[in-house]
Length: 146
Image 1 (cartoon, rainbow, N blue to C red):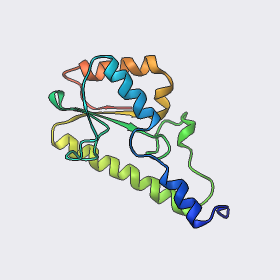
Image 2: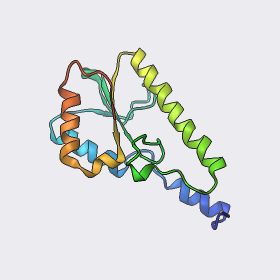
Image 3: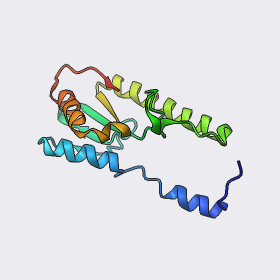
Image 4: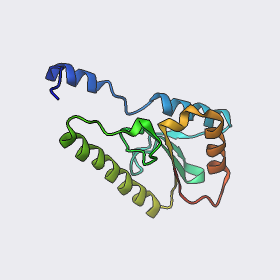
């Protein structure tokens, strides 16, 4: 399929894809703050620059977009692979997954416990609130990777 946008128009559109302060991230931040937890944002000193960092607890939360990070849940409709330009999308999105895995391993080595919140989970706020509370309150939490 041919791109219907010019290179300039495509560049403009892609430049609007946000890496920080996304709607799912803002939902997670509001829930966590509402539960009384305080955190730092996007600590660049840590591998992967986690979205929320709880230094005293040595825990981090990543808020992943289902499409960009390839949510492995087969029922997630947001993670569908585009049908066009797969020669571009497959390596791009697999590269994102590989980078996420390298960051996870590096954080493990540094003793950080991690949680991934997927974009589609933000639609069910009560379940998400419980999941966040379980992760943040559990001192023995391993790797909550969902």
